[in-house]
Length: 126
Image 1: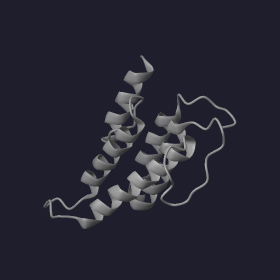
Image 2: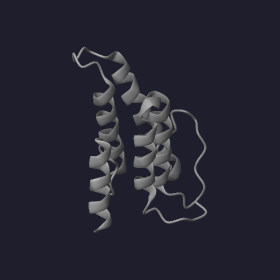
Image 3: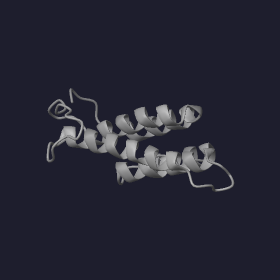
Image 4: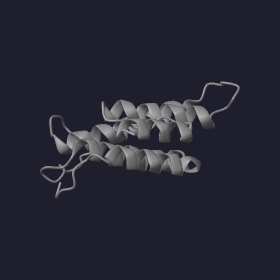
């Protein structure tokens, strides 16, 4: 069984989308959508908390990615990451931290997604 097939199988068992290799930001956004939809009001009422939650996760991922490759000014005035830091690992850690605070009842799914997201990130000082 290939690693990708194993990931897809694990994600389907969790009934949420797990981050994959292609685009870490999009993958975490899809995970957030899956988690939010699983925990949202089944009547589909407008949820202003959803908009705020997406903004928080997006800002965290931007700041993490920007810290590893300082192209833009930090909105939160954060310091640059350690040289050689992995953008994928930084974005995943930021998304995981914020999602755990926003959706504590989904901690296991978020932790599993994080484990999958960083599985292929090489270990190193960064």
